[in-house]
Image (cartoon, rainbow, N blue to C red; front, side, top):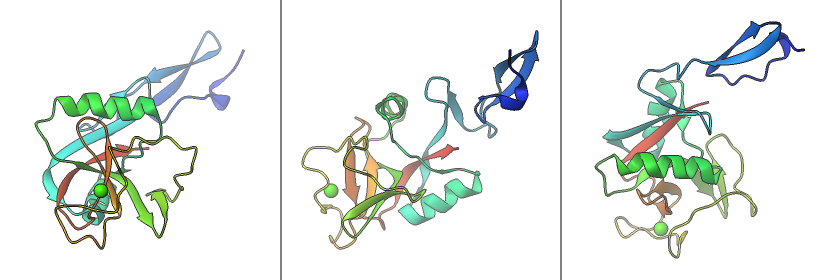
Length: 164
Ligand SMILES: [Ca+2]
């Protein structure tokens, strides 16, 4: 027997006690422009307008009470890849991922470690971006095939936010 005082519901769920047992009831995302995925417990929003630089995209997400997405599991990357099929876009979208020196970080400050999930595109990261002068190729995009690329942070692109 348990109670809602010790519930393990996610932030998108509410705990109710049913016959003295805690049950998680799905609430959906608290921002209606976001889509909730049950399996990965992800609330995400794909934006193809406005096109923004990485830093501005990050700020845009914050206005939603969100952040640029952290693609830290295969399931989550697959979820977004599938969602991108329905988006008419052949360019790359910003993720919440950037580098600092030789290290890569998510925008929550956590480091991408050797054993972290990764889905780099062919020969990526190559510290190169054909669309700009290659001196700030430090922000990571996801293409609609799910592969990651390091790109110039100052290019204006679509992006993906998530509420955590
Ligand atoms: Ca690259």
